[in-house]
Length: 96
Image (tube, rainbow, N blue to C red):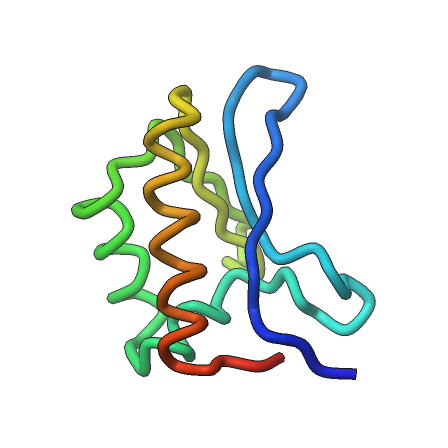
């Protein structure tokens, strides 16, 4: 069953703020490249854009880059990113 892409937020045990679409993880709702597809840009361009526009405190990734995540110390800064992503998903009607 598809749904409109929508990220939610939480705080990690280490104190960082993160967000992702966790509604249907069994069907890959949380894969990191969904926003790049939604925006019709390359994954590399998406990562560069997040770094420049939203300034995460940490970027984490697996060795093969099958996972890329962004972390913020500030909930407010993370929410700027989260709210922007959700607005873009509504604007583009991006269903996954």
